[in-house]
Each structure stands twice: as structure tokens, then as C-alpha cells.
Image 1: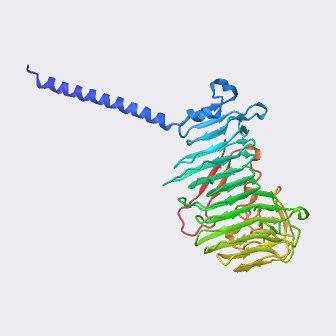
Image 2 (image 1 turned 90 degrees about the horizontal axis):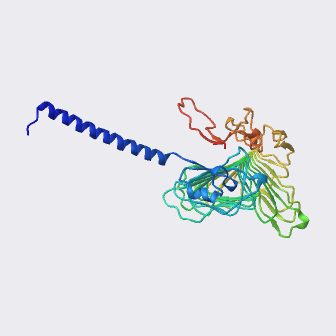
Length: 433
């Protein structure tokens, strides 16, 4: 059979057109399937499954995919969801009612995995703890964010290494972690442990936390890390003990540093450390540094309160390593230290006033911190000593939720910009619903 040249060209065009249609259909299907996988979903949890929602948080976790949000409606009268939670996906938990907490009573366990991100907002862990399970991670990190939560027991995020913990504007008894940012929380005590396989590139930031510990067997803040430099800014830490009722022969330091990263520069600035022991016969070290590696620990602009004044009363006690520099601190009693390498412009037996609720300071701490403009207060005057001073001032973070509005919890920018700089690297962490 013979065909004309014109007819053959027509057949070729139709064939190509049909193939193009098939290709477009396949491409569209691939896009739809890919979009379905990439788009995060919102899964709702309500009491008794009202409105077609899930009736338990565990059911929602089982149904969720990585990247989904689980939005939980608080029960009437703050009745808790009675269930144990195992969070083994990258998920965000939030309250359906803005700035209202949903109560959960049970074991809340987060299973770390490489690149897994778990964010818990507005949870009240009623008579419960939030913790990571014990797993081994290799080649990457997990991230756990705890934001605006109340935890009646502990937040324990150091059971697995390679986990970055960001805990903001929350409360608990004890907080344990190995890396991350701990900012504007209410705690009894905090413990930083070593990350045996560190892959994170950022420093550890402990900023503007309120720590009040009633006892003598624990430190308000205990630090042990060979992995990351430290920035401890603008915290208010108290270890309280009533002398007649205590039996040990020594009181634990408010801040204890047992290990630092070799060769690192570590900053302890604008804090208040209070040891309320009143018995001079007890050994009492407000800040104890017994690290054995080289490096620098700069202790500056802090208020150090220790009323003992006895022969064993060391405001700062340091080992031969690392290099300890103590500048522009106010001591409410005599300045007594051991192992300090450099000490300048410290105030002994200083008198001050400071109201963390109103943000007002008075007395010897005003404009008495480091004079360099890098450390100036928010109003660009010379640094005040204590938590209200410097760019990380307490008033940046407290009250934690003024007016129940979204806010930026952490903003990291250069302290000084040099002539000729064309770009400024900044990191911000925002907290909302």
C-alpha cells in the first residue's frame, strides 16, 4: 500500500502529539504525587473525637507523616489526655486554642533520628516528664524544640547523643541536655552533659533562665562538655539552704564547671549567682571550676551573692586549667578566690538593688560592667552588672508571653559591625502558636 508524502507527515505529527500528551499526563501525575508528599497536613485531636477529629494524641501520631502538625484541643477543666506518647516522626504539636495549654498525663518519649525535628508547643505534662529514648545516631543530628510548655517533672534530652535541644519559655524541675539553646525557662536545676560524637557547629547558649533550688545536694547549674564552647548569659540562679537543718559538711556550688572544650573561649556574663548558706563552718564555693583542659573562662559583669564570710568561703574556686579571667563582678561580701589567673575591677562588699519584674537596677551595679561598647545595655549606656545588663538583658525575655502575642525568642547578631562590612549574619528564632 502506498501513502502520499503529505499523509506520512501528518501521521508523524499526530504520533508526536500523542506522545507529548502522554508525557504531560505522566508529568502532571508525578507533580500531584510529589506535592501530596511534600505538603504537610494538620491532624486534629479533640475529646471523644469531636468533629471527626482523633480522640487520642497517639492515634494522630500513628496516622501522621513526617512534617505534619498535630493540633490538640484542651479538654474542659484542663482534664489531661491519659496516654503514653511515643513520638517517632518529625512532628509539631500545638494547641487548637491560642496560648492555652493542653494537658497530657503519661510517659512522653521522643525517639531521635538523623534529621528528625520534633517541636512541642503549649503542652502541660501533668505529673509527667518529657524525655528522649536511648538510640545511637550516626552521621547527623536530631532536633527537639520545647516551647512554652509546663512539665511537672523533668525535661530529659540527653539520653541520646547528637541531639540539639532548644527549650524556650518553659518550666520543669530538672533539665538535662547536651547541645542547644536554653532560654527564659523556670527550673530548679540544669545539667549539661558531653556529646560524644559532636556534629553541631554552634555554641551552647544558656540565657535568662530563672533557677531556684532548695537543697544542698545539687548544683543550680552543672556543666560538663568537651564538645562545644559555652555562653552563659543573664541567668538568675539560687541555691537555698537553711543552715540549722542541713547535715553535710559542704554546700554544692551554684555553678559547677567540670569540663570545657579544649582551646575554647567560654563566657559567663551578666548573671546573678546566689548561695544562701549562712553557716561559715561549711565549705562553700559559689562558682567551682575543676576542668582539666586548656581554654579560657571569662567571668564578667556578674552579681555573686554569698553571705557566709567564713574561712572556707570561696566565691570562685578554680583548678590550674583552664585560664580564668574575673572582671567587673560585684560580690556582696569579701572577694575570696582561688586559682583565678586575672582579676580586674571587681567590687567587694557591694550594695545594690535589682527588680527583675520591673527591670530597674540601682546601687553599685549601675554602669559598672565592662566598659567596651560591645557590652553596652539596650539603651546604649555602659553595661550594668547582673541579669538586667547587656544586649541579652532579662527584659528581652521576661515576662515570657506579654499580651499572649507571638514573639522572637532569640536573635543572634554581631555585637560590633566593622567599617566596610557588606553583609551581617543574623539568626532569629520565632515563637508563635
